[in-house]
Image (cartoon, rainbow, N blue to C red):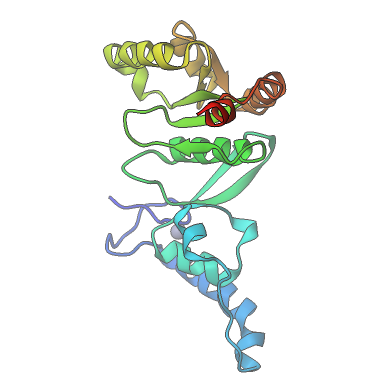
Length: 222
Ligand SMILES: [Zn+2]
C-alpha cells in the first residue's frame, strides 16, 4: 500500500503520490505564493539547479511553494526529524538514493552537510564502502550509519567491522539512529547517537588540523 509523500497516510488510490488533502493544501499554498507573480505576468520559478536538486535533501523552509509542489510530485518524501545539531524537529524533503530507509538517508546527508563545513573532501557511498568517507589532516575517516538492520546480520556486521579496522584503524565510528541500538553496536566499535556526531567531527578536525598534509608532501616529492 502506498503512502502519501507528504503526510505518510495511506492512499486510497495507489497511482497517486499525494492524498487529496495534501494535494489541495500544496496547490493552495502554491496559488497563494504565486498569484502576485502570475497577476504581474511574470513567472514564479524555482531557483534550484539540477545538481542541487539531485542532492535529494532539503529543508522545507528553504524552499518556495512551487519547489515544494514540484518536489512532492517528483516523489520526494516529507520527513520530520531532529537534525544532528539538535534543536526542534524540522521538516525535510528527501529523495532516498535507492531502496534505503528515510532515516538512513537523512542521517547520511545531515552528517555530510556538517562535514562540508570543515572540508570539501567528503563522499557518500551506497556500495560496500563505508556510508561516509572524509579527509582530515591528510588521512581518511569513515562513518557507518546503522538503523538496525545490521544487528540482525551479525556475520555481515563482523565482516564490515573487520574491513573498517583494516582500512581506517581507529579512524571510524558508527552512528545509530536510536539509543536502543547503541548496545548492539558498541561491542564492535565506537558508537554515537546523532546528538554526539557534531562534537566528534569537531574533535577530529581539531586534533588533525595540525597533521602534515601527506597528499601534499607526496605531490611535492614526486
Ligand atoms: Zn497526505
